[in-house]
Image (cartoon, rainbow, N blue to C red):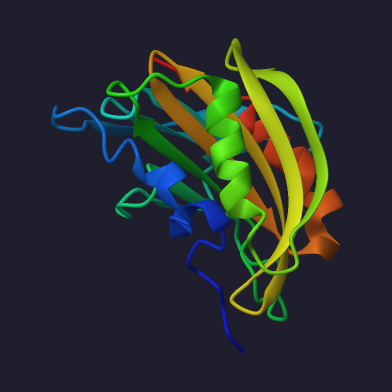
Length: 196
């Protein structure tokens, strides 16, 4: 049985120049902090952890039983759900990509369209939804689509944010058969995303 631990997200594969324009973050040394708090839900109390990084100017919470990876150069952070059973072969995940666009003049719409152009080239691409919304008090673009990556059909929920010439793409990736089940968890965690 193959367990997919690596990120299954199209935007982290640098599909084109749209993701390469920024080429990095600020020059300061990153400070990563992880804290654990208790969050009450209808289910039993769930321990939550917080990923916060001064280099990328954001924080996001995630369940403490998830795996966190902030060592991949393509993303600021990747968050992987635990496998649900011995038969489960895919870890639903959320990742955040941050790029510094201070050398460019670009709007949120332009940034979104550049990325959409690259994403539509993915095998079996099918756009499900696209709309304007708000994340962390900022105007954002929401995109839901399906595509094939590494011979696996997947469904993606993405949010695009532009603030102070920094762009953020938050991506939730699942197999199509778990997308509806996992979307509320994904939306809840994305709702904890805060810009600093």
